[in-house]
Length: 173
Image (tube, rainbow, N blue to C red; front, top):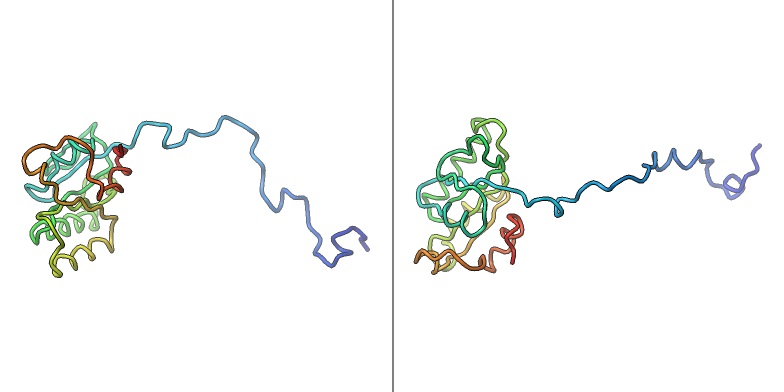
């Protein structure tokens, strides 16, 4: 009969500590953190004409693919862009269906849908419900109405309301 302390205190017998924690790695150079490397690059892809791809690429960086899929040498991380009007949300849902069916070009990584406000103010209930459907299947970033962008002035800081998108793209200032 063993008389070590674990058995004497009514605790189960334990093997060597390595069995519990697993092997301990020897100190090496730490792997590079994502923040230390270059910011992740994205391709902006519009789901319909006038979605705002060029403006978003100007403000947030990344590759402006217009309404085309990224080509060779373009970032394979895709941000789909749509306006928040009925046609834009329907186009976003249709493009999401292309990804769901596996019909998007091989190797593309759908990161999120970026919805750009089509007008100032709140969305009407039917449109807000369509946004909820999109949010149920993919990350969604919302960009508010920016009057300066309408005038063709996409310079300056990204809108405060789109801070999460700025963090994603590495453009928070």
